[in-house]
Length: 406
Ligand code: LLP
Image (cartoon, rainbow, N blue to C red):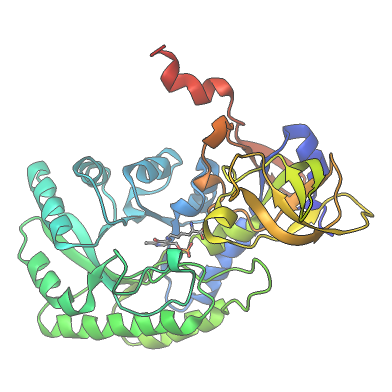
């Protein structure tokens, strides 16, 4: 049974900071980052932490101190990285719908590269750069048309997805980019999906991109970097996750002898298993057909179960609990989809503290105020020290932008 985050008891954290509460282990963040560095040590990649996985400023700052770059998908995320002291020169800007204002902001900041997803976006970036008297560094996101074999909502590398430029249109798109006055072609990128539990699509995507790199080279377009997108999947339940070293080895073999810098954009695997959501049981309700453990965290705090039927391991932090019942673990929100888990064996009573594991990625960053619930506090634990890194929201915070219109 898990009772501690590093050297601090979850029960202490829950009492001290209240629930629901996001707790992160700094050691786990560091170890996950170092694991990428070590696995890929042969190619010295720029690891660009995908900020969307957890955009807390203190977490960004921690990765920045470890030497990380950042993959961002909005002006807001770029602003977060800069506010946290991240280096502009290590920022990648991804996403299918970059606005004029966001492009201008990124150009002003001096980011490393725009990962471009369409021809109209190339035009827009070129125009904004021209107006600003700047040259925009760009990479084209190529859709390699491989099946990432993950949940359809987080699979992004198939032809039918909205992401990237089709393989068949890629050469033309590069020629087009090369003819624009205010663009500088830097690289090529892809991202085929998230929570990948099979290495072969990742390796295949890399192979397909390299074939394109060679074709482009033959046409006089030389690239500086290849960006392989997000990282490997993590263990939520007992999935057979890919071995990072194997992935690194396969990629490094493919890149051997080439003068291409490697960029990676892992998110989930850097933060997912470093985070736990603490929640208290409000009631245990024995229904006619089902039992419900009603807790004080809900889909607004952790949306993954409701949105993707995602599995998060849930443990009761109190000792010697029995007997177990079969129950859904649900929040107070008025939606049938508001569950953290379904059909779990769990022993629990009102007041118990539950630990929702693997909640560090796409947890707090996807939280909302639905049902006018204040977003949870977040804390970062390092050894026997704990720092609050996000204050619990108050109703005043939540209503602030509306009050003046009453
Ligand atoms: N790069 C790009 C362009 C991305 O779109 C993503 C994730 C990443 C990198 C990071 O991928 P990762 O290393 O985390 O697999 N909310 C969903 C996940 C959405 C992922 C979106 N893109 C979830 O909770 O499972």
